Amino acid sequence: MIETTHFLGAWRLVSAEFKLSDGSKRYPLGKEVVGRLNYDAHGNMSAQLYRADRQNFIHDDQTAATANEIKDAFISSVCYFGRYTLDLENQTIIHFVEGSLFPNWIGGKQLRYFHFEDEKLFLSTPPFVMNDVTQTGTLVWARVANPSHTEPEQD
Image (cartoon, helix red, strand yellow):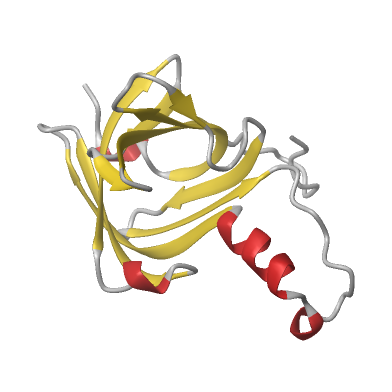
């Protein structure tokens, strides 16, 4: 039986796949992704998802970025944090967004359906419309090992 403790800790993004209403698949962050999802025992969460092959800006000064650099950086990432609640019976989790790279999410809720398979966490969106196409996103997360040393885990 799934318990709240199954979610706690840090998770590494394995894949981010969207299935369209016509059955085709798309990868808005690319097929190669990086990211972290964190849940703590006090109801806090954070998520950072990125396209793995993001391009560096020409300059190290963010304020000197071109419009295209800013656009590319924005659409190749999803970042937000807030609180969460679990409904174990219905296998849903709601993220209550307090801060987000995408300001429209702030103050809102992000509902996800969850299941565990082969020690991975699968989070799926309800169907939604983007670019006039109905789709469902599924993110697959693997638990980040808790190494006994102080060096960061290498992916």
